[in-house]
Length: 330
Ligand code: SAM
Ligand code: SF4
Image (cartoon, rainbow, N blue to C red):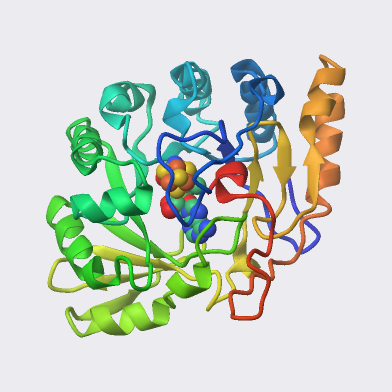
């Protein structure tokens, strides 16, 4: 098992399979992002080898993310390979986070492999605004992807970054639409990760404020449900649907942290908000045997920090960690 110095069991691995994306959300990426050279990326086989080592060490949940995971060439090969751990029972859940731009192409195959749930990021239901926030996105295409996932039997959760002055006036509409379709919604505060053109502080909307606003629309009851993640959930009694709040800035969620993150170059980050990392690519390329890899995992988990120290404030640096969310894997 992988247990850190604070007694937290690492049972959840998030894997960014590419830093590239077919959208350019303004809070996530710079317009002219420089992406990693392809030669630096782990192959799909190497990603499988690393994920498999984590599964052997007690990881029960794997989330494939990015960048946009569905733009990685032949990514379904990786899903298929990892699906064997679902079949054996070693892995409880294989899932992904996607912008749904290409989800219509893959929804049926994902369901066939054993994926049961998918998180889809959607920050607006208004076509013009959706294009502005994503810089390039076509809302109809994304909604098509979401509906394809629903038809394939996947449980869809909508993730929405709450942005002051950008989408704050339609967040209740997003809940209404999502709950009408049978989807849960989770709101996220914008996090200071990586340099982008815009000033994130200007668009930072504390979710405590959003919760009060939604409370005026529906009767919200707290749910005890904890997924091991940073979200706190409420039920809107009138719709029966769930609303989650991820509040890295107003609420520190680190004490129950069960996760680590692997980038597409094989760098393992033990915390989303800290710079310390372990280079697992060098380890797996040095030897075919997994002994050194397991030793490297022990060494890395022994360095998992207690928590992050994100600050978003006027006067604070524009970003707390230099890497973008698309590199670490959101
Ligand atoms: N491309 C996929 C997507 O958008 O769902 C997966 C990767 S994306 C980096 C994962 C999540 O991170 C998305 O929900 C996105 O909104 C969120 N995200 C990206 N940059 C962020 C930031 N600076 N603060 C908060 N959330 C961010
Ligand atoms: Fe791409 Fe996701 Fe970042 Fe948007 S949030 S630019 S979809 S990686």
